[in-house]
Amino acid sequence: AARDDSFIKDLLTGEKQDARVRIVGSGPSGLAAAWLLARMGYGVEVVERAPEPGGLLRYGIPAYRLPRDILKKETNRLERMGVVFKCGVNLDPSVGIEGIKGDFDAVFLAPGAAGHRKSGVFSDNKWVVQDAISFLTRVASDEPHRIGKKVVVVGGGNSALDAARTAVRCGSDVTIIYRRTRQEMPAYYEEIEAAIEEGVKISYLVSPDLIRRNPNGSGRLLRCVRNVLGMPDDSGRRRPEPVPGSDFDIPIDNVIEAVGEFADSLQLTSNEDETSLLKP
Image (cartoon, rainbow, N blue to C red; front, side):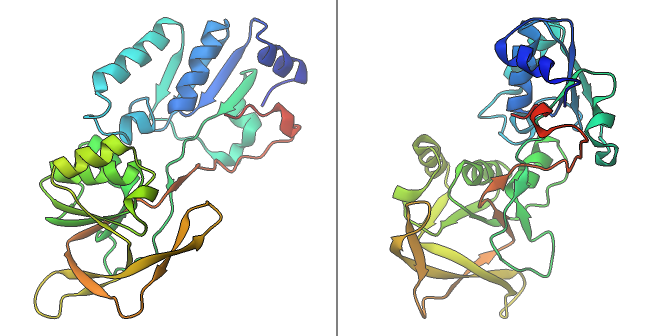
């Protein structure tokens, strides 16, 4: 949000002026905006709710893929450019855009994409099913992550591979189930190969159904169904279709959902024109 449209025009055209911008969120887009604005001569403050800056760079991408010292060097560089980081700050959405802006000239909203979609798997215990981002965040924060010996990861993207490889490092026996074939997996090829080399098993054309207690003993079972690929869906990929009578069970301690993320919403309101909101 800006005080007037002339500021937005000057900002977009690269005109340097004596103004300050508050950035909400210190993930990739927040850090990129901080760097660009600082280079243009603006005063920049970055507000982050986590204890350290970086967003998903710090709490989502595992350290074996993005070493923490590299991220620290980048944030230190921004601080030398004059960027001020305020971490551990939880903003109150009820104050609206103007309240968060305060005496700054503009606000750049970069809350991140930590929201997670659900696979639809039901469990009677909230710790049996968890989402990949929350799991990765707890591990990165050295918090208790309650991961068992037998873990199934649902999904085929990079978050699924990150969760699977992190669970292996926690001592778990990990299986990824993906509802299409490897050809349709959105994860990077090298990540898939690395996961397989580290002992992660991948079952293709498989979808989760429900979790039930093992009738023959302790623990739980994840009931799955096998798929065949039908006609392409809206994404252009062939749609997975369940095969009748193909149900089978996988013994599990935990299921990690990694079927997609979406952007967080600050649910802020503004009395100003929508064109005066700076968004990534």
